[in-house]
Length: 249
Length: 314
Ligand SMILES: Cc1cc2nc3c(=O)[nH]c(=O)nc-3n(C[C@H](O)[C@H](O)[C@H](O)COP(=O)(O)OP(=O)(O)OC[C@H]3O[C@@H](n4cnc5c(N)ncnc54)[C@H](O)[C@@H]3O)c2cc1C
Image (cartoon, rainbow over all chains, first blue to last red):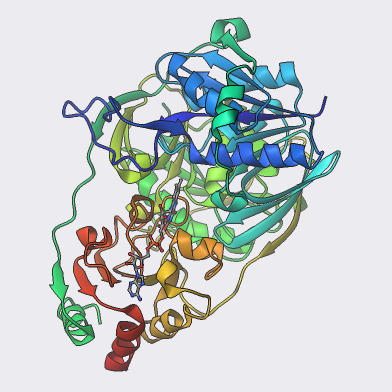
């Protein structure tokens, strides 16, 4: 079956103002709204569109994380994914572990395409897609803003520092999404009801034969230094004067 | 961890990108660092020469191969991995080039990666921003034999001129994949300074209203010898090309002067300008969050204010 595998990560919602815990052991997540990582939503939207165009028959979403992540998998099912895989993992999941777990799912599911967000907006690592592609020994196209899929290849436009780069890649492959790839659909209430009946399978890292290694110790979280309060000027002339005084003009 | 550090050079075939000189400064933050810069190219001589002249570089390796003409992560990563044995730390810049490549290298080596390193505290302690820069994380890498990293270029000065360090040819015997093929790159060329390294940047937001609206910014920028940036909303709306986007998912910059015009100051935008020396905000809404970080704020209509500033400095 022509299948697309989409990675989903549960993260603090992008609208939440992040606060560091007073004891510097993390950021405050109690009572904080959690969501699907915005880039993953875009990945899922793209997968659904490919399926709707007839380019794939099934969209499977997967996450590696604690029990609560099932909420985000349900959201993904409500958006239109066909089924979900939850690899249960407690504590910090480093990108190497996430990529290994996804590789095991790839071996089981044999997707023609794996779509992931280019980064998660919590740890901002931006590693998992590339690591998976490396371990799988398949092409990667990161930061995609346009994706055209044929039977055996894909043409991907990537947002790079210089502008837009176009690559041709053989399938199967890993593509990671940038913001301008699409605008994700809204979930409708009836779809949320329907999503409750869609299959959601639970697996463990041990079952997949993946060791939950944590190699990087998170020592301390700090709030970033605050900028000094600035001045207000009333018009363009005052602004130009202020800049001159600072030696900037 | 070995104090031998490998830096993968970013370049366009002719010119070494300034991001590499910033990686050198970052690497030099490690005591007793021995810094090797690797230049992967179709023909590497010109770029290697520039790398050899950076202070703090001990050695430059050139890896020449027609397949290296375009920087494809899938093609470069196995070559970097093949060179990796003696190195304790492999670094690339936190640019789209480095972010794309280094994590693939890390995957091949089964080595953990630290993204966006903003400071080195010791051989095993690094700092990096997370949550769009709303928290700074200190990470300990004790016990890690080989570490991969990307360097947040806005956090480091570029290494100056020194050397020259010796340049050696390295032979890398690995099969290179053909499953990834370069088609094209579109880069709008202009004579303005490069956004990532410009001393002055003028950015516009959704308020500019159209690509035409941006013309008043280009005009002011040219007077100030400034680069022009944009918010995501402006890029999404097609007022400016994607390479102009500043922020969490665009460019992270640290100019002397940043002028935000008709930009509200969303967290994701502010992430990109945290290290700017002076921030100026022009916005008609006095409550806009951009004023919380602005050193100089002006509440007013940009279509009136911007041409007036241009007139005053002409
Ligand atoms: C995952 C994620 C990543 C993101 N990454 C980025 C990123 O990298 N960069 C980025 O910029 N955004 C990013 N965003 C988007 C961000 O949240 C904001 O939506 C965006 O920055 C808003 O752009 P803006 O300030 O131009 O538009 P708006 O928020 O609409 O602000 C327009 C401003 O213009 C002012 N204005 C209107 N008319 C005038 C006038 N005539 N004169 C003066 N002022 C006027 C208004 O008062 C307002 O403050 C990201 C969002 C998400 C979810």
